[in-house]
Image (spheres, rainbow, N blue to C red):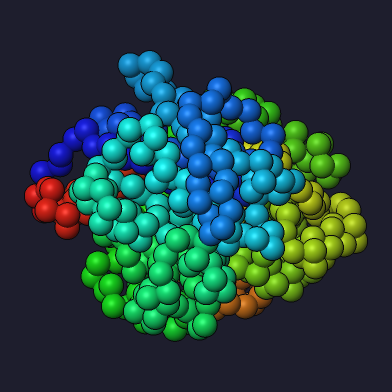
Length: 491
Ligand code: ADP
């Protein structure tokens, strides 16, 4: 039985469309809309980074970060949620502090531990100042990791926090927020938490571990990744802590926003199309080829949109590229990240001007043009908690060739030649050969236009909207409330 009308505060360090470096922002921007439309009072909080346009100030209050007394200004905003009944709005709170967040980038500063200590402390302070007592605080990734423990500490001081449940979602275990033990002082927490059962992690303090240990419920963004991170291969040193959670570590795959990611109405692509008239992809392909200076060709176009980091399997992709480009294909990559990958792919494109293009940078509109204009989408990830790019690719009829890991397993169904079922091509081994093998399976099907059209349609018609996953999050919130003695456990 689902209770409705929960008060939920979703906390994330990035939220689309305000600030985005990866999938977390998409989730934090779109899950709340689905929760709102399912009848909840959901609000979102993130830092106010340089350049984000916001509404006026709602409140300001002091935050004690160690010895520093910082001021937090809460600025208002909203996320529009469209539904059949019209538009509704998710309230957004931007936590503004000139010293911590008015900088050129979102992350990777020397005082990262202090910046997000401020953020976690300010989230609680904001609720108190605004008089907003949520039922559940949904914390995402390490940047929000200390909130559950701070809530427990506050509960001892004021009864208000004692009944508020916490949910912690791991979007990517690789980024853990590890800092020297002194960070506990910044958070106003005693050193008694600096133990292996607490927040200590190989001599440091881990924000991620704090979230896992002290929140009422923990989940990650796919069932397969939930199992994988309990092994030493994927656990990034936290597998023991996660194994202790065992059955209590839930997996809920991400959805995508079907209004934003809709090839029938996306203003960023060259021509609209849908699964009943996928021919529109051809127009998008030719326009993309023109934009990138590639010859107009009917052959298969392979696309990549990715952060250029080790996780994404770019070493095996780069190794496979010369042989891949001997096939009758074109290849387009959009990405930014580690310098050596940026240079490698820019160099590859320069050496193969007729068949390859690489755009180094972050460009949301071009990303959509690549999803719409490509036939095949490559995602050879070393590990992948959920992955959104393959979901967007399928929705736009670009068939994923993906490694059999994490959320890719849970969302891409391997094509079966005998039955014609599936939505993409999966490969097992982390190697250039295995990647090429899967590309070749895709290319051989591409030569059969009827079969390829059916596969494209199957991929486009899979439902990756948020409806199902948002309902699962509601159940998880109720489970968290049950642990606080405030709800019946969901069936
Ligand atoms: P991750 O969160 O690990 O980066 P996901 O697949 O979950 O990977 O989400 C990536 C999101 O970021 C997708 O929406 C993708 O289109 C977008 N994206 C990644 N790189 C770029 C880029 N260079 N330009 C525009 N969008 C990008």
